[in-house]
Image (cartoon, rainbow, N blue to C red; front, side):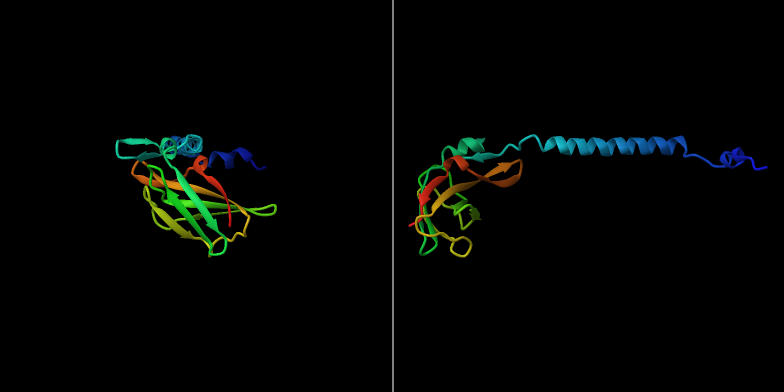
Length: 161
């Protein structure tokens, strides 16, 4: 007759040290996953130095003031920076029939008081009379990293001519 208990007695289990190490490793991995997941809910603080100390990026956006014209023939957007903050780039949003096209253009910084023609003909097209929204993009810092931020509230609506 075969004794089933004999085969089970000869098998060895994991030692308690290895089991404890595995439990700690699993707990650390789970803690890291939860930390990274929760970190995505907390917004990153972006700041902009305007010369007299760093301010919140939204506060810097409130000092952005620009004018824009869109020429559908040449594919150029003329941007005039009348604010106190340099504009790093622009986001152009064109509304068509049931669709919306968006493109971010970075063609050099537009300093305070400057006017620049940004050629967008190769990346986006619009026809005369098309509603176009031009949104300024500024650069802020988060720690030692520089990041772009679109000032949505300071975007202006123009009609392509």
